[in-house]
Image (tube, rainbow, N blue to C red; front, side, top):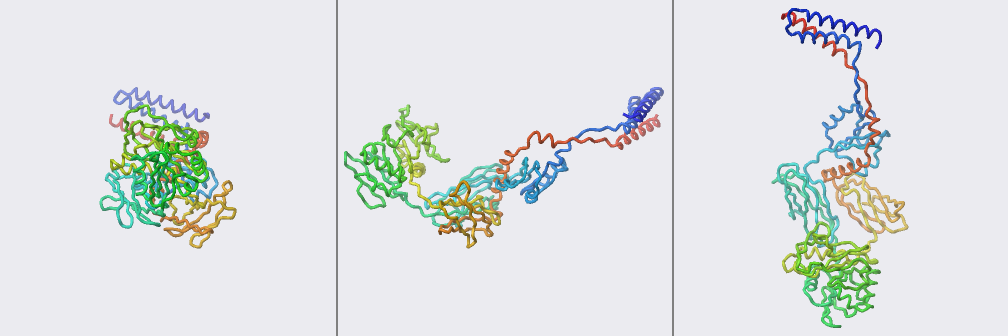
Amino acid sequence: MTAVQYSMVTACLLLAALLIWLEVKRQNKARLLWRIIASVSAAASLAFPAMPIAFHTAEGNMKNEAVLLTDGYSKDSVDAFLKQNRHAAVYTKDAYEQQHERYNLHVFGYGLSADEWQTMPASGIFFHPSKLGNGIISIGYKKQISSGETLAVQGRFNNTTNKKIKLALSGFGAGLDSVVIGPNQQQRFELNTIPKFIGRAVYDITAAVNTDTLEQEPLPFEVSPAKPLTILLLAAYPDFENKFLQNWLYENGYVVAARTTISRNKYSYAFFDTSKFPLDKITPGVLQPFDVLIADGAALAALSRQELFSIKNQVSDKGLGLVIKTDSTQAPAIFYNGNCAVAPSSNHNKQILSVQLPGKDTASALPAEDAAFIKVNSGAGALITDARKNVLACHALYGNGSLVFSTFRNSYYWMLSGDKKSYQLLWSSLIGEAAKKEKVNRQWSVQPAFPAVNQPVQLTAEAISDMPFRAAIDSSAVTYAAQPFLPFEWTGIYRPSNAGWQPLTSSGGDICWFYVFDKNDWRHARAWQRMNDTHNYALLNKKQPADAALNNKMSKKTVPAIYFFVVFMCCCIFLWIEKKLS
């Protein structure tokens, strides 16, 4: 302190002592304590201007903080943040991309997509997500299916109301499937139908409460003609399992040829949707037209060495699929190759197997006596299990083909009990996993999942070619470039101007159709995806503690002198009034 400050403080202390002595000396002792407090406070108020009271406060992140406004942001949330961070800059996406400063970025709204984040110059991300609205927030389905295949639409609905919402799938003006979403919850849903047409179509998925429509979204997809798979069955003996399998294959449009051993070197034959041909010997010429061979382990064991060699070559070289029904623990070692081993269950009593199919499908319980399980080794993977994770079927690659091992011996029980769905799920999975894979000269993909009008769309083609890849949409050329480390992958950017189906035609004449959505389609699903992308990006770009210490700067502030003047006046007024009242 300076000499002047010492003098003023000393004078104030003497004044306080004098005022206290005068108050104590007064004969009227009423309100003495309050008079002393008021006297001391008045004297102190005169001293504080000479000795300003200062304190330190955090200014917040002054120059390194910025706010990014994205779709769906809450103005109240942004205003509340800016009150605490007055120096933070506020940007929109386009404006932020143009500047070059590195900020700790506070993102309000639904955020940005993963692709958009790649162009943003930010060092640290803090996400302040908005609440999702009432609607479908995620959706998934195959946009290309084969004739007769089920169109399965799966997703999640965010119901923010206290009412039940009906979610319905419709096509060509007819209702196809529906599900009810409970109030005030996020709920998964699945809608299924089997389209009865060939070509492209746009179904609708609608959310409604009674007669009020809350949301209606398009579901574009394409149905292509299904090429019937050709199946060769080899059975070691007549039984119900093979009989039911033959009938099911025929009823579901497969081309089937079957050979069943009756006695040594004596067989019965069955042909469905194909002309008869010799099946007494299994030769390469016999195997060539077939996509899948389904055989009992015993039937394979009974084949000659030359026949087994023909099957081996057809699987490994030509891509034939082989399903081995392991009716015993012994089978031709030529196909096992250490991938798996079959062992009987330690429980020889009748068991009830809860069959878990690939994906999320669950078949009905299946009774089994002397059940057998598969031990999966390296090079193979579990395909079907029971509830205890015992492997009932596995799959493995074998050259260009696929092997599937199955321990199911009485799946026909489901057909006898009227459960056709479980039977179909089982055998569709086994055959689909083993089936010969059709060679595709060119594969197309479109990103993002919901291409929108006037938004960039990445078109990718996988083509093995030394020549530059070219394609066009409605006579408008799309420029493609090969990826530096993936020479077979060509990518191009296209910005569609109209919604609806778009034909992408390559220079080789191949056509890929993709659907462009209106900018208002699937708003909630787009927002949900952007929120997930932003959450993930924020996790990878957290602000470091050292940065936080640097940015949280402290500033020195002084209490304004007016406050002490007000205290001095209040004390004086109190002492004056108190003396008048006395």
